[in-house]
Length: 160
Image 1 (cartoon, rainbow, N blue to C red):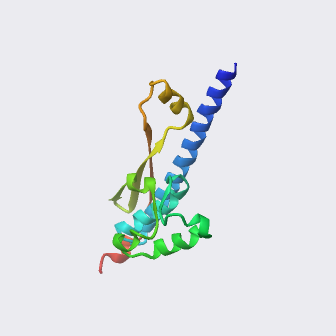
Image 2: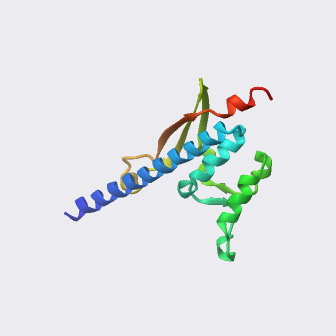
Image 3: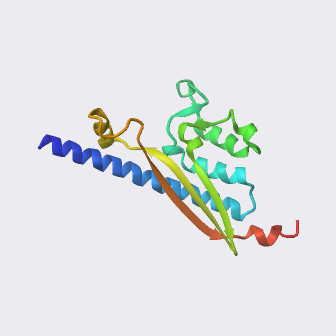
């Protein structure tokens, strides 16, 4: 009975993590779509998506070891959002799964649709499967989400 309860808890934990990751990915896609509708460039859209998925973006790579010295993540996020180019933002803030994010922006008529995909680890039940060789090590699931919103920028930026 204990094995069934542990397996049930593990599957519930994996499902809950996937649901939260999908919700955050959808929110990030919505932020990127909004950035596209007000005329921001591709990098600005990607930044909006990246910041939207920070809670499930994995381990923080940059800045390193700042939590022990009173690290204020919000100030780094603000500074990151103010960067104008990828080169400016490179050393500012970085997470493990940001490089796995795939973003596609498509304009159709008066609408902008942003599709986003991100790999998330399969958690507890799959790790149990890894122990006995049923699931390959490093197994990930790919979450996909999209958001469509009316495009306002196209009307105002046509003459520029």
